[in-house]
Image (cartoon, rainbow, N blue to C red; front, side, top):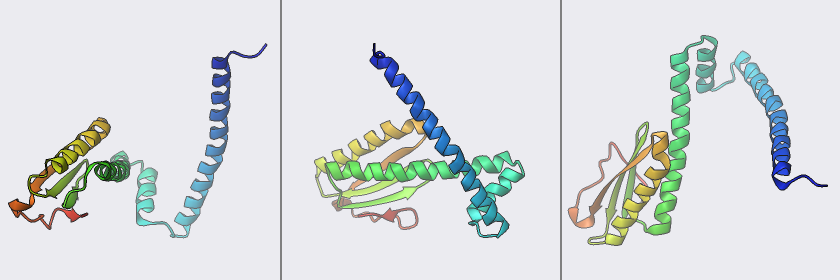
Length: 162
């Protein structure tokens, strides 16, 4: 008599989790040993040194700050990639510039005059990204202009993409 399909899936998942754990710990220890060697020989990046200094000093505030910065950059990279993917599927504005903060991407977009489809595409892309990322505290906020507005991108805040 064979196991019920549900029971078989639980056993396979359990085995898979065990395999992951058995691989993860040795890899983690190897990485720690590599970092130790690089710290001793002063061959680590400044960011890695700051991380370990905070860890050694049990400086929770600095640790939290460093982890927050790292996680923010991870989310922001993914958010920008997803946002540009959404625009690519829908419509591309005539000009596009982005400004980054800790938790928000400001979008400066210029569309052709009376191009409602491009404006809608920008708003839908913003809504989709905000729906996906707001639960993590990250947002897109758009400024949409038409060419006839003749307003240039603020150079000190935005990086031109298109």
